[in-house]
Every structure is written in C-alpha cells, then in structure tokens.
Image (cartoon, rainbow, N blue to C red; front, side):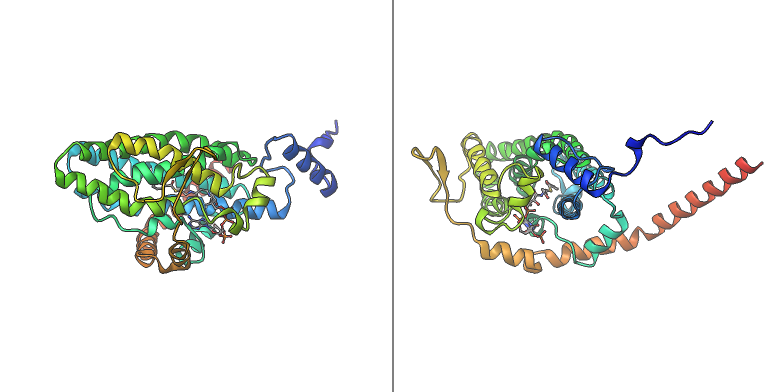
Length: 327
Ligand code: BYC
C-alpha cells in the first residue's frame, strides 16, 4: 500500500502562507514555529526575545553580588531562589528564540562579543542591601508591567514562556517591596538607605520601557504584528500609576518633583527622563557595562569544561545507542 503525505503537511507556498499569516494576525491568533512567517517578523522576534534572554542572564549579576552578604539565612535563600529564577527565565527565552532558527551558541556569542543588547537597567551598581529591595520593587515591577501584555504576543512560544515568567516576576516584586517595607520600619539609617536606593533606581527603571513613542523605531510594526500590545509610553505611564500608591504605603518619596496627578488627563504628569543618560548606557558607557560583559565572558570561559564534558557524554551515549540498535 502506498501512503501519500496529506496535502496539509506540505509546506505552504509563500502566497498561501502569507495569506494565512495575515489572517491569523487579523484574528488575533497565534503563529507557531512551523507556520510561514515574514522574514522581518522572524528577525524582530529573534531581536526582542534574545535581548530579553540576555537581560535575564546579565540581570543575575547585580543581585548575585549580594547572595554572600544577605543579612540573614532567610534573606539569603530567598535571594538565591530569585537569582536562579532569572537564570530559568533566560533559558525559557533562549529556547523560544531557538524555535525561530537561531542557536543558543550564536546568541551567546553575540552577547559576549558585545554585539547584542540587554536591558540598560543592569548596568547600574548595587552598593547596599536596600538595592535588593529597590530592584525587586522597581525593576521587577517595571518588568511585570512590560511583560504581562507579552503573554498575549502573537508568537506562541514567546507568549507561553512569558506566562510562567510573569508568575515568578510577581513574587519577585513582592519580595522587593517587603525588603523595603522592613527597612522603612527600621532605624533612621535603614530608612535613609531604602530612600537612597529608590532615588537611584527610579529613573533607570522608567528607562526600561524604551525610548519615547515618537523615538521608538520598532514599536509601530511590533504592535501591528501583535508582538507588543502597548506602546513604550503607555506602559511607562501605567507603571508610574501603579507605583504612586505603593510608595505611599512604603513611606518613600519618588524622586520626581514634577510628579502629580492630572485631573484632566486622568494620568500622572512626570518630569523629563534624562534620555542622554539612556543613550549613553545603550552605547556601552553606563556605570558598569564593561564589568557586566567581562563577568559574563569569564563565566562563559570557566564553563567551557562543562560544555565539553556534556558534548563528550552525549556523543558516547549516541555511539552506545547505535551499537545496541545494530546488535
Ligand atoms: N535597554 O524601538 P524600540 C527582568 C533598544 S529582564 C536596552 O522602542 P522595541 C529582570 C531597543 O532594543 C527584563 N535597550 O524597541 C531580570 C531598540 O534597539 P534595536 C527585560 C533598549 O523592541 C533580572 C532601540 O532601543 N525585559 O525582568 O520596540 C532581575 C529602540 O527601541 C531599551 C525585556 O527585554 C532598554 N531599556 O521596545 C530582575 C522585555 N529600550 O534592537 C528583572 C522585552 C529600548 O533596534 N522587550 N532599547 O537595536 C521589550 O518589551 C522591548 O524590546 C522594549 C523595547 C520595550 C525593551
């Protein structure tokens, strides 16, 4: 009996594929790895997902620096678990990007060669324990605002990875808030330390949302493809509206003297973000860009023996399987 492949398994011709892609986007459906997609859609996803993965991996450094210095065993185990979560997020995201035809080795090489972007926020230092609170509250808080809409991204593997990531980020944000709350209920010195950390992380956390809408070259197309669901400025505004009542509970001051609720617009007016600082950090001239990459390169070099051992083990297993099958 001759079995012929069902016609639906045949790769769709570009015209059919394009029509299906357009219809799926129009219907707010999901694109899956084997579906036809425009090259530019594939490229923009690889760009965004790989940058996001690199951010999670580089983002382990500012907090990783405090694991050995956490003030108690409980704080140490919580911080350790959080930093491990970030590593996990990086791995889900590298896996999602791999479904688009790039390898993890290629992405890693781009990062250690200094050719890939990662979030500007991770180039700032963490001089005090209160920075762990400010990162959790502000950085993970900004990440949640930005990433919850990405759970509905049109590319299936990205959206699904984001669901799990967001659940963990929301725990991270609460643990940061709780660190700050504990400090704010402590001594004058502890309150000062918490306020100082908020002062240093507030503006960089607003920069995490990217440049203003009229200076964001990728937003319009990414929104048309249902990758991004909201513009950079809309999400930034939503973040600030979330922070104001939480800052009041904490008793910290957000370091923007122009921040006030505007009854007419129903939104918060804010002071001007220092976009020169943002562009300097993106150009590799932030406070710790060089060290972050140096550390990543060193970790990569130190891990070479693990990769070699895993490759040798996998090759031996494969030979053993072939010999068993041949016997
Ligand atoms: N930093 O046209 P635009 C975490 C780049 S990790 C650096 O608006 P787009 C966590 C942008 O890439 C959270 N670069 O771009 C981990 C573009 O350059 P290219 C990380 C930035 O893509 C550990 C150019 O500027 N989150 O949560 O439409 C511990 C023009 O921008 C930044 C994500 O990665 C920046 N801040 O929008 C704790 C979220 N902003 O590529 C927490 C996923 C912009 O053209 N990514 N650029 O050379 C996104 O949502 C979007 O990619 C962005 C930018 C909103 C970031």
